[in-house]
Image (cartoon, rainbow, N blue to C red):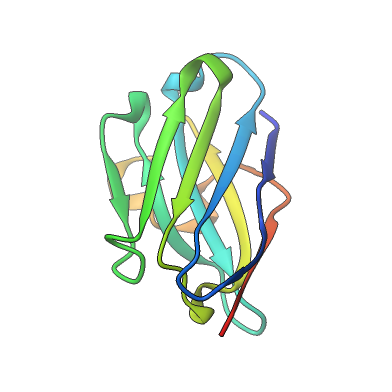
Length: 125
C-alpha cells in the first residue's frame, strides 16, 4: 500500500485546512486509516483514526470537536478536516494504514504498517 498525503500549508489561528491521503492497493474499506502528527522536538502523536468501513472514528482529546476524519471509498482517500486551528497544531501530519490492527493498538504509531510521507501544517498566531 502506498499513501500520498497532501493539503498542508500555512494558515492563521482559527483557520481551516483539509488534508487528504490517497491510498493505492485493493480493499481500501478494510484498512484502518489514521492520522498522526509530529512537531519539532516532539514524538509522533495520535490525531485520529477511521476504523474499517469507516464504521467509527476516534480522536485525540486535543483535537476533538475541531478535527473530523472522513473517507471517500470511490477515491480510496481519507480526509482530515481541521477547523479552529491553533498554533499548537503546527506539525508534520502523517497518514497511516493497517489491515490487521486492533482497537487497543489504533493510537500507537509503531503498530501501523504503512505511512505516507507527511505534509506540513503551520498555524501562525
